[in-house]
Image 1 (cartoon, rainbow, N blue to C red):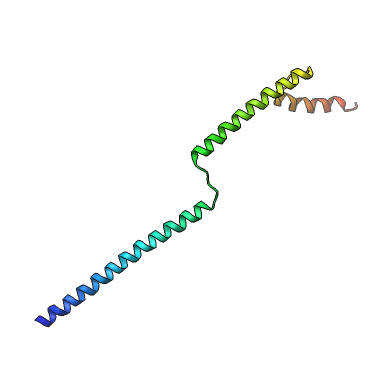
Image 2: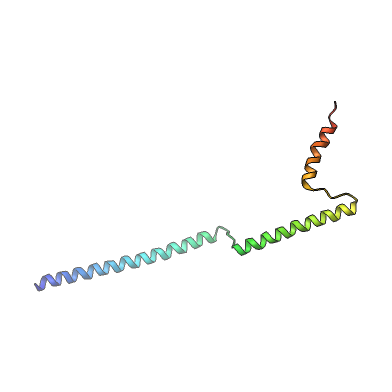
Length: 101
């Protein structure tokens, strides 16, 4: 009986050692996978939400400033400021008016 107990004791030690090794390998694999994912994502030039919102706000302010400067330029040149839609509609009419009958 004692030999059987010793056999099972050795077998349980081997199984426990293998389980510990597998657990360690799993942790190492997960750590390596996370590190590779960070490296890959870091190289993709992603921006944070805060950076995106800041640039979006800057673009909106720049569009507003451009509209103000266009109106000021038109006033300095003595022209009435034209809306983009009105300017686009005026071009086809001008061509239609030039067609010979």
